[in-house]
Image (cartoon, rainbow, N blue to C red):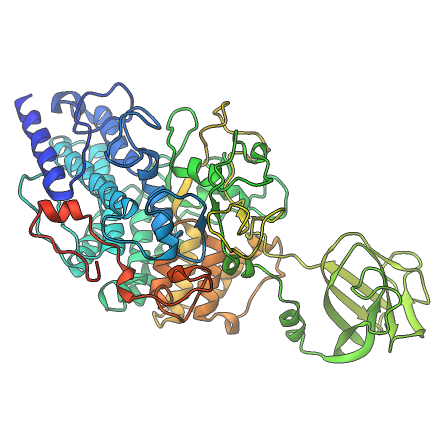
Length: 635
């Protein structure tokens, strides 16, 4: 008992002096437990008991306290729900970009999208404290679990705790730059490590534990295996040039290949039959509907047993408002908060002009006429088709529900319809029915006297609610300004609501690293000169796009695979998953005027801002306690 009390005291001193966070150090009456809360005899008596302590290390990224959603927080002086890790990750890495705006007026919150935050911002402080606490929990677990290191299972537990610690330090380095590097329980005031030292620590830890973690796919769902180490190395190496000024794209390729050759696979299981399996990734049963096979590292949530006002409870509730029906999202009400900007929405707009230009044909005198076309039956200006080969004519067109015919030179003297609705052209035949509004690919072949009118499948990853919402944002505090995002739902693949019958808390798990990101890491690293194979990159990107479109309509070739294409593809595939700010920094777009979005720099049209905002400030309280630390420039 005396030994453990000393450890507890040392941890408290470390937290207060090193990171300035307050952690509950008393016995708990629920699981998972704080590894600092129980005696060494109780928690580390055997591997099974130690597993409960490991759960708290994982839970430090998912939960916020000891009683559930509120009432006994791990971190004081900020609303408990606000301080949850993935909610803070969203605030700092998505809300500061073109991906998100929020309506709420909490002090310091609007500063994030406006990009005028100051030192002492509650949200930048809270993330630092949260990550510091995760480091503390991991350190405590690693030190105490060493006494059971002869047990093979405990060796896996220690490696997992080291992964969580490395993940926390990756984020500290990304968000804050130079931070204390504390790897052991100590009462000493920590020194400030530079970004290179943090980078080296994360890299070396991941390289060392890759062989100590369980094999691909052999661990319990929600716990990491060696593929997680490879995946985080892929992300680390992709950003190495922006982190430490040294390009490591070749290493990104190497570790991306390891991940791509593992047992993880892109989820193509369209359980609800809506034409794509993408939405299944973000539903309440994503731990079992096939999405789990793509999740390399995820935070697990359960509406009854792991309640928090952060996590996916935040992502679902905060994105619902206006005329949206909460029941369609498996919740009891919306929080009228999150929307997105036109920049993200416009990435999903079908550019018909580009589609037609890519046909490669010449404009002809054959065209489309009818009530399904914009100009109606009385048109003297038909939609002219392109001759793409001899007597073969094509066009992509936006049509409405109605009828049409093919007509030559705006003259009824030569026209075709279809008397039997069998795809055969009949001179002067019956009108051809267009059943629904949409974008269509129309082909007329006069060699075989046939035609086809095929709906052009749009990218179904763009999940927006537009009714009563304005695309343009005039006032960020008005929920109806900006389209709502419907990506995350608390319903399962069969349409059933989550397990919490009150509708308060959400079951949907949140992927922090999934295979799709690694595909895009690989493609970008190949383009940036890291080696690899461009054809493999194309195949992997097309795998994602085939899921997104529901068919091969969106497939690309190697000629399409540019850096800006990949950035846009990352935006469409990974929006609201906590990666956007880092991506924009890597591309040189986050602070510069090279890429603008509404209210960037607190300007309605967007402006460039000072480059120092690529890092967030260290909390002033930390600096006042620890004279070894220095504030980031600009704050």
